[in-house]
Length: 403
Ligand code: ADP
Ligand code: MG
Image (cartoon, rainbow, N blue to C red; front, side):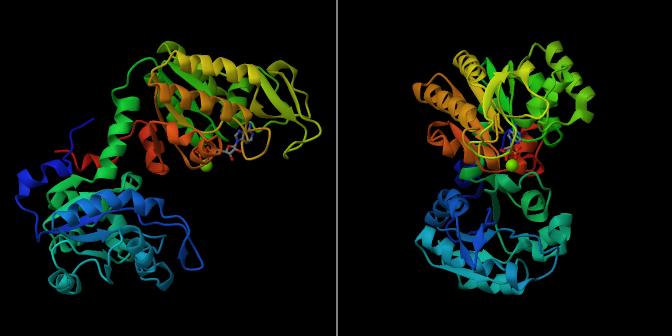
């Protein structure tokens, strides 16, 4: 991991931050319904950084995007909507400023006292944000003394407030960003070996780059979900009516060959749970060997024998990265393999023999459903940024923080 500055070095660099102005990029792209925030996880993630800076007497200006307004003001996407929810989580009053740069922000900064917090308007109302326009970054920076990025989830974008600002102001990783980078580094950057990766979910096509990168990095690659069918088919298995990308046969074989060349063992299920209909508890449900799938059946989960073998693989590993469920976990009983493996991983982590890091929208839902999430070492809610990190890409928002 390239070195980045944390809030620990703030005092050494800038002296007393009391009264200084901090621009803090956070993730306030909150799920909303009928004008109300339905999940405040992202606000809580930003809480330690905001309170730390406020506690040191900085004037904290929060920067965030909301939705996709495409460079124009939109009354339905104003960040004024989230002020109440942020105040509730912080337990402090928060000022709203309907601009991100210019005299209105300057006046607001003049009104704020040391330790006060303000939310600036949706950064994507300005065209320069997504274009990473250096003039916009300069204009935003003109009202502040330093920049803190606490939005890992937006770090795969090179935008003015995720990347550009780090070039024009002293830049630091916030506590949430720091925790994410440290966890990810433990999982793939500098992991204890052997390392296992679970990659599941619907399609190979959405995670091709992830698979290609992981075979060069891990000792065991566990492939599950719909994408396992594509690999099974490439190996000559008849997968019946299963979700399968037959056009990716060559790609699947290339990935298997690359794994072989770098000493990565690929695990595919050898028993599977199948049914004729895509529904919960279907009458045609049965478990069989992968070679016994009928033409009118679909593979919807890895079988119990495979799940147990995979658990044994994890018992011999020290590190696990997980993205994607092993089956159609939203419907019983096709959650069984995912739940079983998640519980094994959670137990091994609780015992201290495994470092486990997971991410992905459906993955997080599946691990919560299994009651396993709280025992994992780290759960990333970063979505696209997490996947790009799993692809081995350098995230521009992170790179810009490197000293
Ligand atoms: P994440 O959001 O964690 O990155 P994905 O979106 O890639 O995960 O994949 C999750 C989806 O994959 C779930 O909706 C799940 O039902 C589906 N899935 C998993 N296994 C199968 C399967 N065998 N057949 C069809 N869909 C599957
Ligand atoms: Mg998904």
